[in-house]
Image (cartoon, rainbow, N blue to C red; front, side):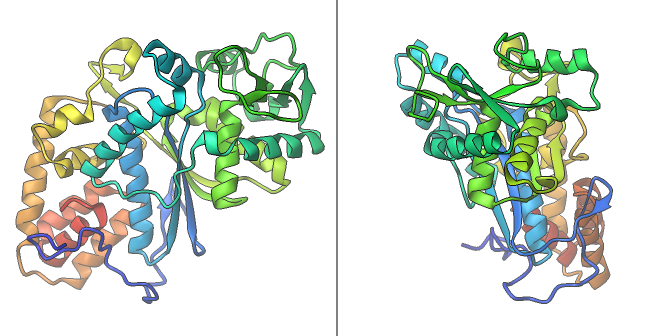
Length: 386
């Protein structure tokens, strides 16, 4: 399929085997990230118990841009985006609605996939589901036990997690653990920072056999196991929301590194800034959600996507209707610019350089609007805005 501008929707401006400029190196967080082939992205995905709001969408659109910019530079890229479909919140929500956790999760996942397609997010190479990787969590637990990084007690396997919290304020870190559903005051633990890799299941909980009895995985262990199973022992870029930095990303990486005995599990991290409304982070508990599906009834997916991208990726921001109107106007200007004949090689290099420089989407878009022609078409291709 071709767009009205003559652009293939999945054309990033390169072909397999193409020789690219050796000076094109992706910088993330202010430092270069030289890439081997394939580049490996792990994206912390959804817990499928609710509809997609802008906070969710921001993370997944930014993850898509990371992969597209890598491909723009000629680097084959593998993306693994998990589905956390073994989770106590999902189990409770499904039970409240008279549904099985797995069947209910699949229904919610369908709605999520539909929203992602509307936002031009490319399907991941791998979409591991936690319930399909329970055996990998068991193997992870066994590896951690063998390495002395975990211990078994009363059907639990606990990861020794003090190192994951190193350098953080103790009280603040314990509060974040509690806020994220953990129980630091559990008397079975040697240390409040230890977290379950495996835990026994109660009545109504999903359960699988293990060497320690019937049970289910811990949250951080699920992501560690799924990343190892789909991408191997090193992840080039880990993408998630800013609120996942601790405890989730810290424990996920610590578990994977301890199990493999290798160095840091993750080379770079991209955590999308939180999205709020009226100064408060979007969350179901606060009732301030802006749903992607609602916005798509009045605006194009490309406009919503550009609204999410028109800032530094780590920047927190508040949604307002005016932000979407501005994105629509900016997108129209980009389309007009792409219709001109300007073929400046320097302008194309400039917009590519902006995207490779810490994913500077605002800089690339504004350069493209000013230069028009090939530069604008490059931005439309790479950012999937057509």
